[in-house]
Image (spheres, helix red, strand yellow):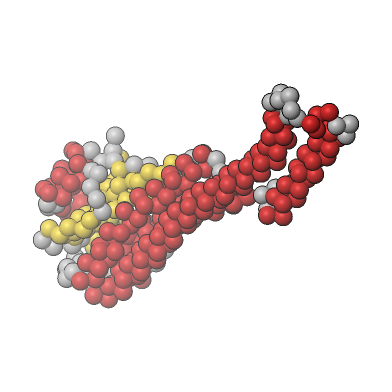
Length: 323
C-alpha cells in the first residue's frame, strides 16, 4: 500500500506548511511557492489524484504505473518526467529501486517504488540550505539526482573491496569454484550498475540544454556537476569490471600453472620409477641364456645400477625444476 512520506509547500527557501495531496494545485499556483511531495509505492488512485492536481501527462502516469522502465528523461510541454534507479545491496545481493520524478512549474513529486534509502535526507539537506532552496524546483531536482548518483558510490566501493579480497585469495591459494562463481557474480553486478548509471549522463546533458520556466540558467552548473559525478562513477565501474575480469583470468592461469607443476612432478617420478621397472621386467623374462644370472655379484650389480640410475634421474629433474 502506498503512503505519503512528506508533502510540503516552500517559499523563499523556507518551508511554509505541510499539506494534503488535494491541496497541491492551490499552493502550486501561488506566485513564489512550490510543492514538494514524496511518495512511497503510490497506488494508481494516488497517481490519478496527482494527475488531476498538477495536470500530469497521461503517458507519464502510464509509465509510472507500469514501472521497470529504463532510466530516462521525457518532456511533456513545460513538465519533466524522469526515471532513475538506486542500487541496494543486502547480504551480497544487488537490487535496484525505481524512482519516478515529476517536475514542473510549482511542483516536484517523487515516487519511490521499493525500500531504498529514504529521500527524507535530501529534504533535510535542502531545508538546511535556504539560499539555494530559494531557487525552487530546479534546485530540488538537482538535489534528488545528486542523491541518486551518491547511492552508487558505497555500493561500488563494497563490490571493489570484495573483489580485492577474492583477488588476494586467488593469488595465495588454490582456485576454488566458489571463488570463480562469486567473481563472475560481482562482475555481472558491476555491469548491471553500469547499465543504470550510463543513461544519467544523457539526463545531465539534457537538463543543461533544456529551457524550462522552472529551470534557472544559473542552475546549469549544478546539473553539470551531476554529469561529472556520473562520468566518474562510470570510470570507477569500468575499473572494477576490469579488475574482476583480470582476477578471473589470472586465477585460471595460476591454476593452470599449478596443475602443470603437479603434472611435471608426476611425470618425473614416473620416469624415475620406469628405470627399475624396465630392468626388473628384463630379468623377469625367464630366458635360459642369461649369463649374469649365474654371476656371484649379479644381484648387487643390478641393484647398484638401479640405485645410481634413479639417483641420476632425480638429480637431473631437480636441476630442471621438475621436482
